[in-house]
Image (cartoon, rainbow, N blue to C red):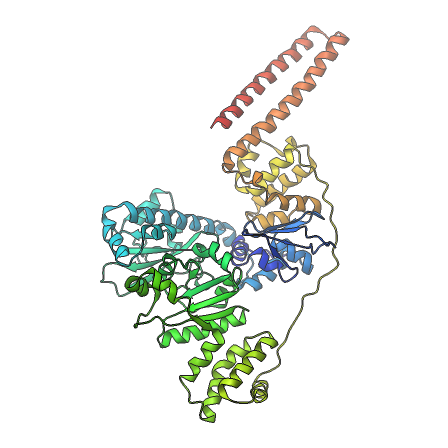
Length: 603
């Protein structure tokens, strides 16, 4: 059976939302201003929706039939796939390169989490440095000159990389990160292991939709660097094609408005947010991509484009319009700023937030922009000019899935070019192949009843299933034979197997549960905050103590029964004394464990 690395599973989860995977199969209805959706369950017939999708946690639960799971289990059910096949299915949807995990990758599967931890840690450190250190005063002054407020600095967690070339390396080494890991972060020179990529630069943390910092952009403050802006290279946690600067900071507003302003640079995004347009984001030093369009489509119906009005900006706008149209996004193009102002950042500096806000409300439809842009290039009084305009807008027409929508564009083009609509349609059909459509079919649902009742042992194992990195600590105190609950024993054995195989992905762990009822129950625990406590270490220690305590109290109760029986049957004195001493020892152990439990609770 094919086995894929944990990093592949994590990358798929980062690039796809559960609702995005489920929506082609069922109609989802958003639950207020939350990340939750409701639908009629695809696994059984119902008229009242009882199927709940938790997008942020990545799990679904049907309160009618008891089915629960994540994106992998969902496509396994709907498409009749094995777990590895579901990874392959979703990897293709997410655009994640797939290869089977080899021995080297098994040893490296923690790299993703470690590098992610480094980026989140230093984002806070760079931000603190900018706010508090005296040698960052010129950085604070520069931001003030760009009309960037302290509130905006904190909202975007802007930072400062000091000119001291040893600061970052020393900071990370003090936090016990190895040189091998530091080489993989992209934060240091390829030629000099301890020389940081960013020195004396304003830093823009690039956060993914979950809020994790995955990269940085840096603006030079020395005036001596050949590159005014540089970005960290792609790493195991960062791909330019799949992220947007400002997406996390815009998230709550995107959900409310269901639209986004897409602009060119980091300062443009920040300026728009400061002007009250808190739904702006930007591509990351590269052209707008299909992956970025799919990311936007999770939250938005409409994209407002605000690229520079020069030739390069026009080309970028046209490409973005076609990509958005291909992904079913409505488009508008914000009209150029007045008085020769080239971008939002300059508009904020020279005209202020109010005028920037007002200017961004003036826009025209995407197709209208394409047509008028082409009219400036070609003379439509000439036949060839009309043909050239048609060729300019044809890629947009090709990207239009709806024939009704395309018909409207034909009519608009007919009116502009003063050519009969039938002729334009004929020209289009002559130059275009057939357009394929498809639909998704579903199998008849199967109802699964969940009759599991979780006692202390099973609850303990579910805690560890949700936090498998603490299983070693648990196993050192509680052995397999200690457990009596069959389901708890099953999970214990799975965690032991996963440990031997160096499996850390929760998705893989869940698929190792062959019993469908238990697997559904385990999936359900993933959305229960009880299994994701704030202090997991303390929770695991409490579990160990409580299980030991329960075992000792059961043992004491059994010995007490023997004592009562011995009194009735006239057991020899020595045996009777031995039983009493056993009770005394058990009482002492119980008292000590209860004291430990009280200390843990107080801490």
